[in-house]
Image: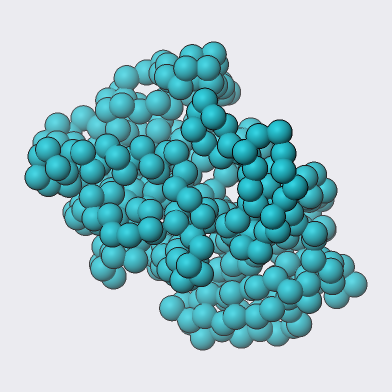
Length: 357
């Protein structure tokens, strides 16, 4: 993996990654020479036991611009700079211009609830220079590079000493609120352990103590023995529709060997993981012959210590439950936190296995 680091005119950091030596053929741009005055705040929700982020400066962020004003494309006109330079590189990562969290967030004035500074980090990960492409259009090696980039960002953010959890994710499709079509994802880094990861850690830890082995090991073995929910299995990694799927075609990508962080994967495991992830995304697009809107989340262990019991995995939540039919969160999901699924996971897995990719 080749890397190069730069500082934008507004002070934000940019890191380029490539499979081959990098070449930058223009200046390092920024849509504005001045940084956005980000003052994110967090308030405590006492009944849910979780923090809520407030970032008023994000109201002015870019929203579905025409193709000629795509901020994630390499700059073609110096009079209208984008976020990225011209050159030869595969993946770019830069500090979000409109962050929900920052490492230098100032202490806010007291609020009507328990209030504190929104400390953390928000980064944008541009998967490709091709504005019309998809994450699944990356080659196997480029997909493996992306996994290495996610691992590298996690390691770098941990070194700040302020970050306890990192979430890499991709939102795709206007149906899920995407404001830029260029293939990209984001990274949110928190100075605490968010509720979802905290609950995963508690349950995985309890299983490891009671059973004497990691949950992921038993889950992979059980899924392989049953065979009904496995979609694609490459030995060192596999994809499944979990038997407890909340979304109709929810798919997980898992390493066969229990690990807790992306950085713990071997080179061959990383490549298998990448190939299974690509296969999964291609199947979801081919299922209804449309670009499936989805949320993709990478679940890694918290960074506040050693958590070998935490199961590294990727969860993908497709938002179509049938051709032209969206999955909306209804009262039971939003109000009670309990999902209602229209189809048994084994049937959804069979449909995905039958897709030709």
